Image 1 (cartoon, rainbow, N blue to C red):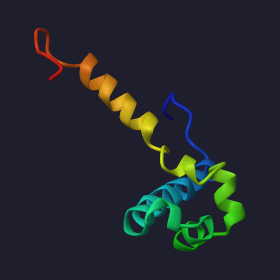
Image 2 (cartoon, one colour):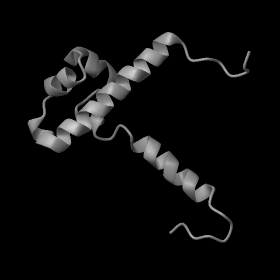
Image 3 (tube, rainbow, N blue to C red):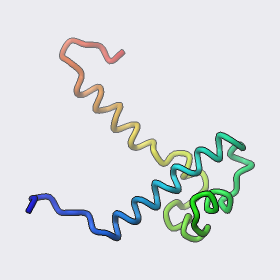
Length: 89
C-alpha cells in the first residue's frame, strides 16, 4: 500500500462536481457576459441545483476567481524551478 492516504469516493465526487461547475461558468460568462448569466444558468449548464452550486461556491463572483490559486502556484513554481542564472522573463 502507498504511504500517502487515498482520497475517498466522497471527496472525489465533490472535487468532480466543483470542476464541472468551475468549467461551466467561464464558458457562459465568455459567451453571454458575467452580468447576463444567472446562478440558475450556471447550475442548469452543470446539471445541478442552485443550492448545490452554492454548496461549492459562496457567490457567483467566486466562480470567476476559482482557479487563481492554481495559477499563482504554477507561476511561483516556474520562478522557483527556473535554471540558475535565467531570468523570469
